[in-house]
Image (cartoon, rainbow, N blue to C red; front, side, top):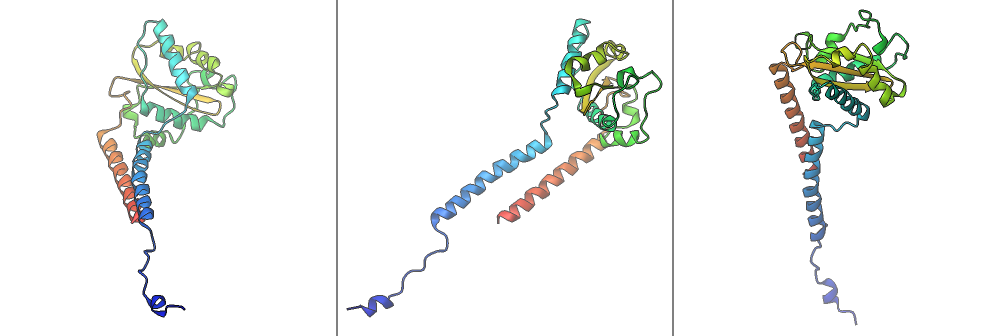
Length: 218
């Protein structure tokens, strides 16, 4: 016979989530934060795969070594400007009068050049002693790219001891080398105020991002 007392006996309420599910959720959160921090570090230090740029800088430094000249270290700000200029050139076709074949004094100018400098936190006063050397090589074939600098009018700059750093940028068939000096008018070092402002903006941006993620995880 059915025991009505047993049927009417209350059963303990089951929690909507088991202990194992809660532990799994906590573990996921613990794993998420290291990934988040890693992503922020990558944002601050983006990894670039500019093989053409690296190959050219190595080739230029080998060329300078053969002349008993010091190697040109990589300059981030010069690279930034080189990237901006290469982007401006990218849709221009290669001809016998472009790039390293350009007749001195007829190089194309950009009306927004001050804006390009500003995007790299630079200005005319800290870049005027530098040298900007664009070259156009179909498919950026490495050996041809190097000779466009070492066996052209640009070799004079590469042989000059006043240049102490380099930045390289490329887009499509165009590659641009920007040389820097160790003088205040060619160092490509941003002003202290500009660098400080950019740093503060980056910090605020990352803090806001962390705050939003923390709220979503609550």
